[in-house]
Length: 288
Image (cartoon, rainbow, N blue to C red; front, side):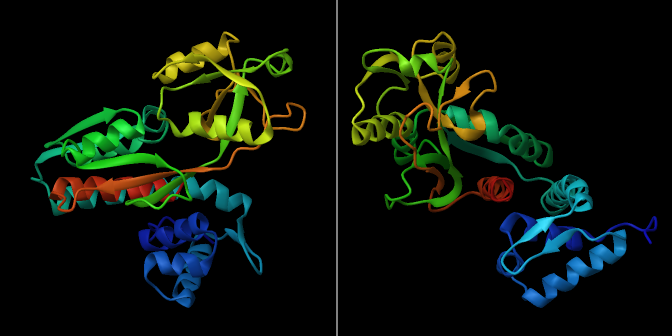
């Protein structure tokens, strides 16, 4: 039976880690604890709330209905706890942090984490730059960024830490655009762009005729062109707007697209504020 006593945040942290990593052994590695200790924490949490939160299988765990309900609250409690502890540990932390990221990734995945970081460290100035990956790398190598989130091919070895994997999809204003006679019109970002290269490479491998119909460095401009029916585009699955048609099926005939990665690169000697932002980003992205 539940009571009004507060929940132990470490129990909630173990619960979230098991869900995010997909199992007890993986969560134990993340938390630097033994698997039996993590299992005990989950049992204590379930006893505390009075519900079974996880269905345990031989190879995976799945959330129960009660677990799904508690998960979002657990994330928010941990985020607020970590934010408060950051303020208490380093209330006078000051400085400048320069972060770079592709526009599409920045607008979809970073606003919440940057907002929480700003609240935790109000005296730290955050300078955000949104550019294509190659431009971000040039700026980073020139010393203009402390941290950068960059797109890369999973098969290409490069410095940095993988923090995100992106399934890609074809999108268009309708299926009719794929069925038109002639070369397939593409809506793409300027070279070099991972999505542009992925689209062209997959079409070439599948023997499709194609042409670049519209080029735009702005995500808003790219989406406007697709909505206008000027061509099809490649986007991360999570960023495909609901008003556009996803064309990754047999009916479209378009070739399959492999995933891409987002990697975090950092300067060799990060300042204390930059280290804190790195921690915030890693915690936010590892759960998604």
